[in-house]
Amino acid sequence: MPRLPGFVSQASRASLRAASTATSSIPHSASPSFADELDPKSILADKDLSTIARAIGCSADDLTAFPNPTVPAGGEPLITARQLTMPAAMRPPFLDWRVQMKPASLKSKKFRNTYLSPIGLDGAFREALEILGKDRDTKYVQVLKLQSKVDAIKAQFGVLETNEITDIKARSEAYLIEVKIEKLRILAELSNPEVIAQFERGRADMQFPVYRYLARKKWEQIPRAQLVDRLENMHVIPDTMPYIKPTVDLRVRFPGPTAYWFDPGRILSTAVTAQVPEFQINTFEDKTSRYTIVIVDPDTPDFANDSYKSTLHYILSDIEIHGNKPDVDTEASTVVVPYLPPHPEKNSGIHRYAVWLFEQPDGERLAIRQRGSKEIDNSKLLDRDEFDIRLFRSAYGLKAVGAHLWRNKYDSQTEAVREKFGLGQGTVWSRARIQHY
Image (cartoon, rainbow, N blue to C red):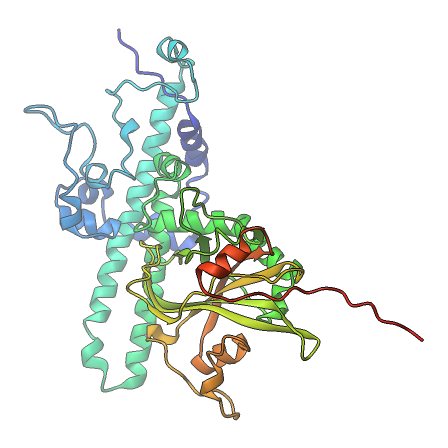
């Protein structure tokens, strides 16, 4: 009698753990009793693509792009219609038990082919997947019900505009329900072992709430704390801006054969930083916003005042970013101030180049907005030699949401960079001996 194929991996162990905790992880607002009059199988096993797309949160046209490779001639599908219509990044292939699968944790082909799973594990794994599937389908039924409520409320927006207070209440209610729908869609797939496996392999599709949720949690664990630590310990805060609570992941790299997204605070060669940097902005949200990037050097020597001043190196505004497309399109944005390559002067020490990411108000294009009682001198807003980033932020009504930095110092390539971009001869700083009489 043939036995079920063995399948032991991180995904299987994750499903067993998730099945045991699936019920306890459901919040009170997402309890199964919320959809007691609907049968999940009758809703999500239906081959109506519009119903399935409505629950998952995408369009029916997108689902038709994914054919069913598991339908035998004249037979029934080996996986459900809802699993079938999911994008490949979220489709769980191991739910089809007729497909022979071996644990990927075994590197040797010989051991993989001869592997036999422990007795009872296949049945336990299958039961765990069934538990997770029922819990997931129940949440999608709740999504369908809540989505119907939102549609009914939004249909009244145009009618309710005559009564401003009633209209505001209706819009607030619709917003709160949409937030609940977002949470339910996350909970529906958060325990899916295939989703976890795809995310760990770097194949996440950010159009789905569960992947955006996992990406945000991963960023908040280490990268965000590391960024704030570098900004404070290297005194970028408060030398440039007084404070920031990052909500957006800003990544920076310089083009070239060895291009890579570097960590904040890295010391780079002036030959590398001579090119215009590339950026990625991960918002972790399904919305479109506009941003402005400003790069300043707060370590330019100010000999006249025996101090330091800030030099403006780059301003790129009107950067339109959607949660699914984090890459910054420089050509589609507005270059307010062209990029000035870093060129530290000899013996001037290590220079910090702070990259600040500002969110433009209401998603509008960059425009001066008078703030406070003081008059703003527009001629000094974009002064490279004496740039005041705090005045710039205040004048345009911007909000700091992200940051990055790198460091440069005078090296063997600095003079070549100066000559290439016509920056002239640099100053050589030296210590002066003071005679005390």
